[in-house]
Image (cartoon, rainbow, N blue to C red; front, side, top):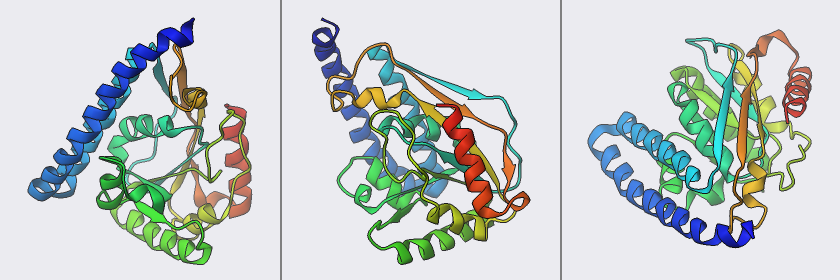
Length: 242
């Protein structure tokens, strides 16, 4: 019965969702031309705020837990597990003051209103997962830019989404490349729970009553641990919180 009732509400939800990403595609273009990076980023912040509000139409919500202060005036590396596309709006919105920049697959750079434009023009990094050597070089150059600007990086080292919520083994290449350059950075582990349930029926209908829990943990200085040991430590922290 709940699934049947979910269909009409999902239609309303997707109408709002589609409207916002379509309108903000144009808003981003105008913002970038008139106000540059800062204006475009502000438009992306507000878009993600609205996308978060949209899920309330389905009786769903996001809880963001931040028990530790993040260091200031240093780059941050936010390392998270990955369960669905709904992991992204909370990270954009709640981490907005840190200028979060995502490392994403190149395929997302085309065809998705608002999202593709932002990934191309918002200082994020698109990589070809079939070109490991080229991707590592791009990540290192990307890390240098982040270090210079004192921004933050968001990376999902599992490499792909977990469709049943069970954590996957980390792929270390991207993190090792970041740690090589960002010696003064801090890693902030993040665990995300329950967002995989949004895709339970391939996103239609999205079920009712889901609480996405986003938990951040104590920042760890990159230079305090050997790189491989740090990755294992962060992976253990994240997996323990799912």
